[in-house]
Length: 324
Picture 1 (spheres, helix red, strand yellow):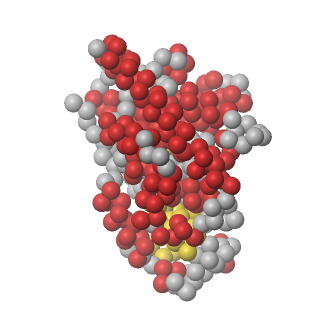
Picture 2 (cartoon, one colour):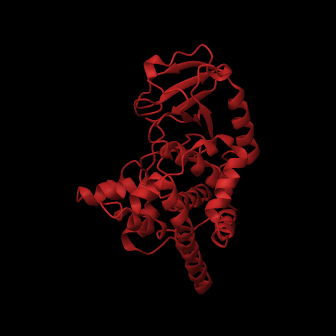
Picture 3 (tube, helix red, strand yellow):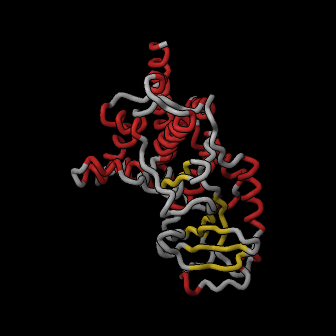
């Protein structure tokens, strides 16, 4: 029996989004390393006491677009550990922003920003996560973790559930092209010629102390900026194609519902439109984004990356059947 570490259900995420849309912003604070990161972002408190991160990336709005599309992709996949995202417009005349002074934040009126759920149980100093030993072994040996690996190892139910979460992570980051989580560690190891970098705390990944749930935070690079970077004809972006592939192929342990949902998208003739329309149904402000070059790369490559993940899952199924 696999013990499940619960994240947020679709209904809980929808309730959060609808509630935050109606909330008046009570206070905005400058970001810190432990609260919302880079300059121009903001740590926000609403009138009901909710904590949010306001992601402001103008004129690089593809980062905000990537954040919200990555969130809705996680829903389509059945992955429940990506913080919820709601879009809003910076406008002092709107009830949400009434009495808020933007002068200290240099936010431009009319800009669309992302409000991102703060996961209360996390502490950026204490919730850091390293890759489990079994996955590190698979990464170095290029032999994936399979059912046979589990049977031959003393893995507890809790550890097994965590492995399934890592499988979800590798699928999600492969499909979004995220270069600022595990892939950034792989890049650091290559650049520094120091393989042990991959053993350090993983960027933009935190774990709840009580639930052991992994949380995939900071997904702004997903689908747009990441795709444009990875498939650019110049620079080192192409290295990340291999980084993502190598890490995906450490695992043959995946949640059944995620495997099913990957297959549904993989056989969809226009999966990018399926994702966009699903997101638009839940987030009308998406239509205000300009569809630039990064969006075009996403539409051209998303199906390709889905098929690559599906091919690996099929290979894992063959491996499993061979050893049964």
